[in-house]
Amino acid sequence: MAELNGMTIAAARDALRKGDVTSVELTEACLTAVEGAGALNAFVHHTPEIARAQAAAADARIKAGDAPAMCGIPLGIKDLFCTKGVPSQAASRILEGFKPEYESTVSGKLFDAGAVMLGKLNMDEFAMGSSNETSVYGNAVNPWRRGNDEAALTPGGSSGGSASAVAADLCLAATGTDTGGSIRQPAAFTGITGIKPTYGRCSRWGIVAFASSLDQAGPMTKDVRDAAIMLSAMCGHDPKDSTSADIPVPDFEAMLTGDIKGKKIGIPKEYRMDGMPDEIESLWQDGIAMMRDAGAEIVDISLPHTKYALPAYYVIAPAEASSNLARYDGVRYGHRAKLSHGDGITEMYEKTRAEGFGHEVQRRVMVGTYVLSAGFYDAYYNRARRVRTLIKKDFEDVFAQGIDAILTPATPSAAFGLGEMSDADPVAMYLNDVFTVTVNLAGLPGVAVPAGLDKQGLPLGLQLIGRPWEEGDLLNCAYALEQAAGFVAKPGKWW
Image (tube, rainbow, N blue to C red; front, side, top):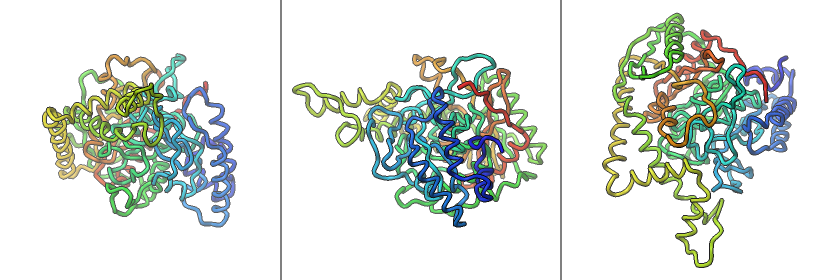
């Protein structure tokens, strides 16, 4: 049997049922891997005692014959999910010392299903970033390297710690969140699978909010089957979240037949960007050929408002962030600045927020506050909302023509080096989200699947976008793509 921490969820589930391995053994293998991977800086809060107790309980449950699919599976939890009694900082100084008295709905569902928490994972501060360089814990590092070059690469963001941990086999899978591509872009950068479900499919309750109309939790896993298994455990109606959809959760794994004969796969002409690297274009063409060979019908489609997606996103997301982050004021919880004699409440707010928030969060809060201010609300925020409606309608029109899924690149490049994108030009970093933000603006499900390596040996991913609430169908298309691409590369161990 391969190293235990290298197993997929599906293989581990079957081995646990047969008694070939115990959850305690799996968990110890992962804890050892985590301890030896400090150079990746993926895990930032370690919970070995909790993990061992959950693993022992999972073994007892499996023995009793009452065990769901996720029972006994060791996971990493993104630091954005509130976990009871465990630091939940959203990678920000302002939440230093915050230990929630409650469990987020998604992590609670996973633990109810018997999953094991190894610890909390690194991320961009408040999920604002595409490279995991805005974290109070320092950068998470991609386990992949360019050929023999030792330069540290980004694992993507904001779920960079999750992507790095799964790709390096520190855990069997991890939770992520996706506001503008924060599951799919890091998945593509690290050669793993990540799905952002339809908005409302997973509860947002207990997940630290960035942009409430865009945020969605999802699984980050080693393959499509694992994504299907874990997603089933994470979804479901939650009365504590007013945006949670009250619709049944199918058995996504049972829908993975790999048969996509007669499916219509749309190829949007607007995603052929100027300056797109040849490797991304040729990977996309390979993906199209794979889907065609699997029996799908390839249809050229148009999503005419795509070019407005990034500007609309970078008005709406900061506006919602400005509103959501107003609660971090140093009064009730988290960091509070030391005050000088004579300082009043205004100085306390100003100093606390200046000390507690990093530069990217400050930048987005200021942009958001500006676009919501009296003189600019209509010019920016309302206009962006109207554009969002048009983007959503583009997708509705395409799906009304019988398109089952849309195939696009996941990212405009392979992983870049940490520090290579200068802070002087934040827009260059924002362009990383060019293929992913439309999916969040329209509330659709999207999945990134590793499909090849670039000439430097780094993974590249393709994205499939599905109809709302049809994650099962989308995952089946992704499964067919995965089978055809046959991606099995792993990073060489250097850490």
